[in-house]
Length: 66
Image 1 (cartoon, rainbow, N blue to C red):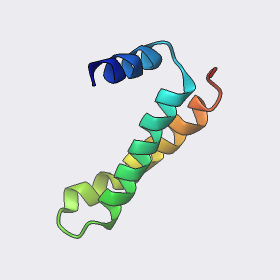
Image 2 (image 1 turned 120 degrees about the horizontal axis):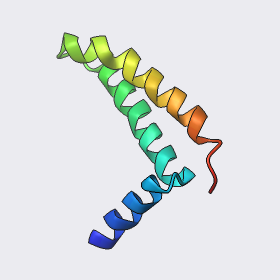
Image 3 (image 1 turned 90 degrees about the vertical axis):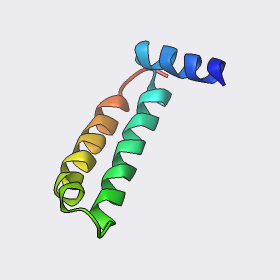
Image 4 (image 1 turned 60 degrees about the vertical axis):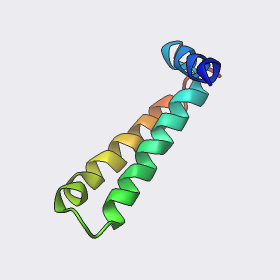
């Protein structure tokens, strides 16, 4: 497990597309989940911002080298 984490962090620091796309996708998914949950108004308030940051990040990251 440590080698997987180490490999992921190395790819993030080297600005590799795969790792950053995964982070952006996780942000988008988290924003959508925050938007659909009925329990917390503060999570709902920040859901659009989180989704927007993930989307913009995904657009930028798609230009990184593989």
